[in-house]
Length: 338
Image 1: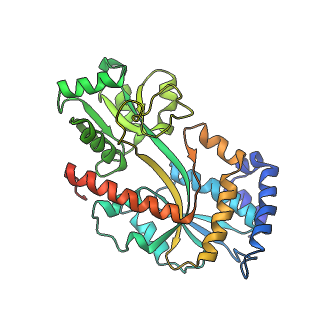
Image 2: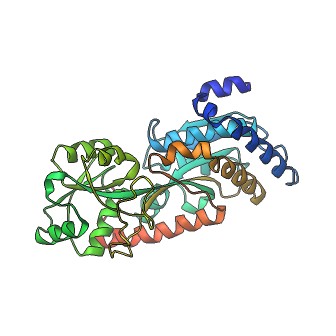
Image 3: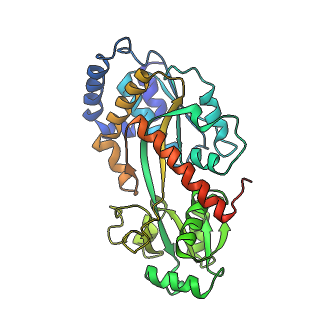
């Protein structure tokens, strides 16, 4: 497949916006990789990015944007391969069993840690993959329906304590998800209880809050920004350490006195554990260069995502940290793998 066919297959829209930035990134990458002995021609063939979820969601779209830019940067075919199923474990296992050459990548996120924390039966260990770099972070926001009579976080806490177990909270992606863990973690920090309602995704959860059928949700900022701007949802707090650029008037939980409640969804790139350090370093440089492009980041940041590259080691540390955190939350809440 030639270069034109690659770009047509992935869609030329994003590349057009990147313009000369991608070309300059390509030159920088070639210069940097030339200093790595025997890796100056890496990748030497097609690269496959396994995405362990269905096409169409944010994780899939971000992986396809990255693949498009890397194809131009590396002058190689970069294929996105969706392998959904079993709470993402089918796709992860595909990468675990791949040759550790750096040509098969995994684009996954916090679910990698959640599966381990909940004790799900997996055909691999979380340490069977190693990090390359984190790509994005997506904080959550606590929103309530306008008719609930709550406009500030302290009023919400008062309501929860006055009506224990009665205030309903939507759980996008259902039980055992990061949203479920976030709700239970907040309840544990506040000493409160909510009536948790599982949903198949963020969109139906938002629709039921808008319709007045559910009272509240901890949900991704990227999925609620427009509703908040239209005042269809009332935002009370965000789960990041710093305020969101797209919701600058919404305080953090830390500001509101819940200093030990910080939780964020994230995505990152992984490879099989046996992949050599030198290959991981080259992958990290190339992917970080793309993520650092202003043109690449702009459309994502407008939705509330934060571009968050880092070292390979730091991503492994994030996975280990989240496994420990989620395991503790799940144990107290009695969350079991379904």
